[in-house]
Image (cartoon, rainbow, N blue to C red):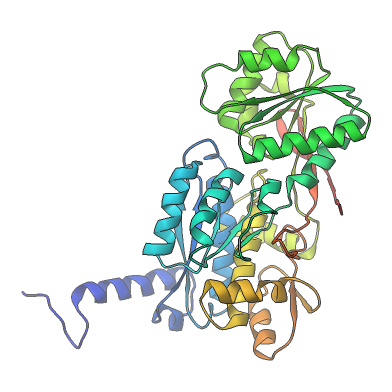
Length: 414
């Protein structure tokens, strides 16, 4: 039997269309959406490399938001489909992946990356192509000053805020002398600088700031420099892949002081890989979530879709990135980067009726009526400033009884 066109549709197109419809219906997407051409939104997350432990869970935040949008009728009457690309936690690999999202997948926006240096690299693709890029996790202050023509945003706070809280926390814990070891990229450099500035402001002494390069078998030279003046605490601004090695080698070398960690090391596997008895009592900081109606709804919805919410940062921030992309597109009436950029603040900043997690049907109805809306995110208020930055709480966490535990969230206004 020959396969060719029948009633104007060839076999390959028929299979592609019916396959899309079946997949959409399986996800609970209204059938009317399955019959139309989907709107693609990209994600640029690490599934390999130094941040591979974070990528899948953070991606789930974006998937959940897309699911809620589709249940509300989709965007502009069309199904939302997420196109997933692996950043490999590498600036070059992420640049290549971003090119595919933009040139092959034709996305008007993508969510990512996680590492600040990787996001900065990917922006060399998004900005000139007028594609909106929203990172849920890149915290370097360098993103604030980026010449981006308004196309780069983030739903997590800058390390200018996390550093303020971490520096004060070190002082509150009674440390008088602290050394830092940090990954030599935009994330590590920025966080070490902001922490040191804050700790000094609170009367502490920073005895050394030591950068390290990823992928080395040994960091004993860096540890010798950091521990030379016998600090009370070693602040490690790292990723699990190399941070685990640094912690182990510090302990093996006889270091008896305390550690202070940040968001890059807030990963449950760290405790197993280093040993709870060495890490119990260790404090850390990370961009956190505000206790709101939206956060409560998100936690319940995540559990229904994926199981228990893991104690990892930035999952809520990924939801907020997808949510504000969708609301902005609906408000602008076009599936383009320029339309998203031009409308994103009008749907996520005051004034307007509050829209909480999952309330997309209500939001779309208000937009249709010409009313103002103000999206309240799963992580907190998503009030994008002129630089595309937001202010959300900073979480203080602790390793207790072999587990990552929440201590409190602190809001920083400056």
